[in-house]
Length: 155
Image 1 (cartoon, rainbow, N blue to C red):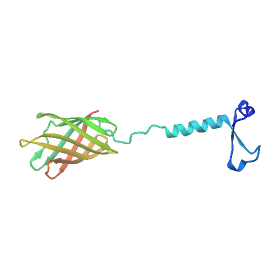
Image 2 (image 1 turned 120 degrees about the vertical axis):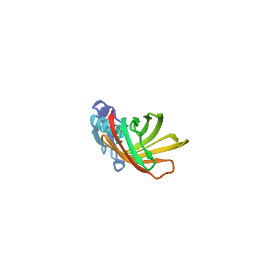
Image 3 (image 1 turned 90 degrees about the vertical axis):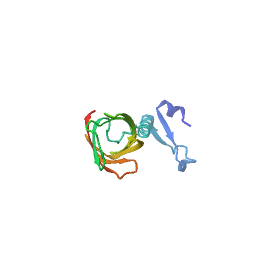
Image 4 (image 1 turned 135 degrees about the vertical axis):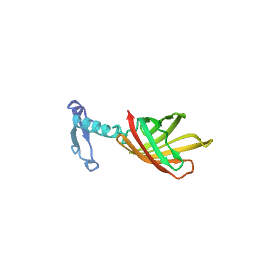
């Protein structure tokens, strides 16, 4: 309980358990300091988290080659990034195909589906983003993975 004098002077009393039975054993803390400490604590707890994910948004020229599979010369990947979620499309002369994926730090996974030898097949890109370049792997269906490279052509 704050006395009328403490309230009028802008001070609050903080009582320790060891102060029991002592009428003047309270520690007096200026109210401004109490408010400052409370605001400081709130700002630390409520501070927004800064995204630590690499920037993958934009248009990428994609290249891969593995056995019977080669990327078309005009293959582009257009990526929209919302924090760790990736969406967009693969785009080349065969058409446009929606992509979905995730990114964590600089590691990403993107999947999409297209027709390969007459069968709808899932294709997965995994790798690392470093500035304007992507290096990683392509997995086409159940075939062995092979190298992937992409460079950003626009942001």
